[in-house]
Image (spheres, rainbow, N blue to C red):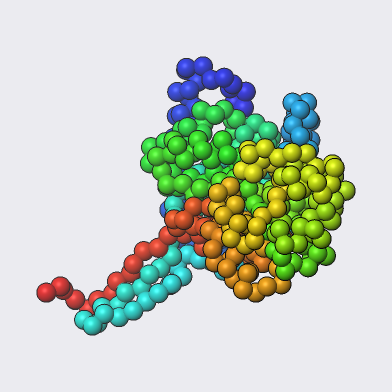
Length: 432
């Protein structure tokens, strides 16, 4: 497929569909082989893929430089560039992540439960691969490696699709991984990437590619996820925007609150775990609000606040109603004073995205209530929201943060990329 088909003429649409359906068939055939691979064979193949990524570093960096240059020319902001940018350290981290995934326990074949019925029949529930997974992501090329490795580890084939911003980088990463896997006799359909940026490819994947795709995982902004949820004809692991909150409770230590808040917001502003709203308890607003807001402003973060936040520091600009529900993914945060724990929980429930929310407090009962009552995929006590990451959870990496309630929630790692079947053993057993 040519990477220059845009927009797609009618005849090319038919060609694109045929090519993607062919990719689906290759993925389905490869997946049957992956499901039977031994844990050691899969681990060896992933280590070969990590080595190939390191060997291909010059080509990956060259491709990424072209992507970054195009992004700058199109006026993309610093947060977008940060998500897109690769350097030797980040590529090494990508390769190391693939090795970490190789070292994880293999979930396929794990018996999660077993029991014996009164008639002597033995039943066990056993983890199995999901099948073929379609991953649609935007500007972070590392997702190609993380998603590919995680899906492979769980015995799944994967079809990756990224937008034009990260396409060159993702293509080179995927080529490297394919080379490493093929060197270990893995079918080439195990990890594939759609090599065109056209949105038409998204629609084709959402249709299921004639039954080839079993589940879709979107990794990107609100508009992408909304489209996926609206159009998908296969199950979706929903990843909504990360409108994350840091609530500074009345029993919060100021030094701890400042440290956690700055890390939550400013460590990397363009990741889905970045804090987007600061909530400060009314009981400590007189002592905590100005230092917290001031620390953010001094660190280069714009603050959009309510009347209390504006009064605390003249540099704060007025917040709009829209700001409370916005994932800025930039050096911007909304700030508000709330009237206690109940008000904070209500604000998060009304404006949040059920992704990641944190409370800073020395009060164990307040922490217990927050952790129990805030209905988010990840809730934290006295810890940065930037820990919303599969690698930090010990999953090796993640394919995304699922914010829905079905099957997978939170960081989606290898276990969440499996289903299960029931294995029943009898001895000529018949049902009366």
